[in-house]
Image (cartoon, rainbow, N blue to C red):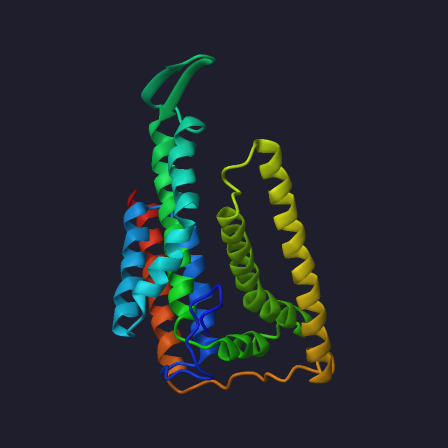
Length: 259
């Protein structure tokens, strides 16, 4: 399945020791842990656990990190922007035509914390999804009682947004070969408008064909993907999360008592 936004395994099923439902549910729990951390070292420790256990589970890190790198601009945005809007301890002052641009230490620390949170969440969810196929992912959502109309829209989005992007790239390359970059600004605007209009027109034609084919296959008369049954090893996974919860909870209590 090369044309998906997420790193699903190819084929109908994976050979994971845990059920897709438990993997997805445990990633949500772990994501909550990452989101509520206020100590950078604890956050880095949790990210280290994700990387360690992901390596033991033979996660395809090359695929995961290549997709996570696309969100790099979001992480850099928080790290570089927050120091100029939050804090009281000045660490840098730059003279600009409209005044002083001041960076604060508290904002920098908070931006780094937010950046590592985003990195940890994206990496963890991509790693979790890389251990299941698309059918298993939809089955896990089905087990978690997600409405069927959301699942149908999600399947279409995951399949056809990458095709839409590829279509735009092919048409843009074709326009560049025909002098798109060498024309005047007004000509470039017209060419860009023709490009967008053609993509929308092709997308509409394709959506009609997809709708008709899915209707002939019984779409709208029930969800053909059923829920995923749990496995015995799921108990071990949730027991590990329970132990981790106790450790983090006790750590916070000790920090309040002795901090």
